[in-house]
Amino acid sequence: MPMKIEVGDSLQLKKPHACGGNSFTVRRAGMDFRIECANCGAQIWMKRTDLEKRIRKISPKE
Ligand SMILES: [Zn+2]
Image 1 (cartoon, rainbow, N blue to C red):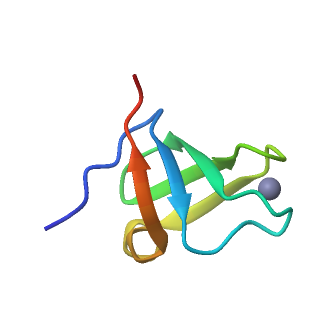
Image 2 (tube, helix red, strand yellow):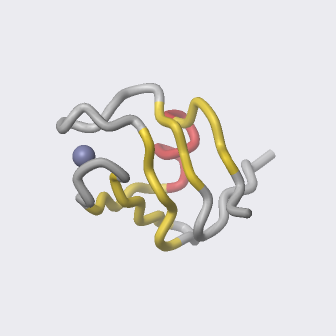
């Protein structure tokens, strides 16, 4: 069953970004996802299947 990931959600990934940040914000959702590193602002494109494997925790937007 696919995870529920929506634009604006915060994600904690199993592997931190190169900058050391471990928190990402979802900027675009679909077949491909665009996530933004909350620490350095870098944007990363990722396939849904790849992203789901990397997620440790989803914090839905308030
Ligand atoms: Zn970063």
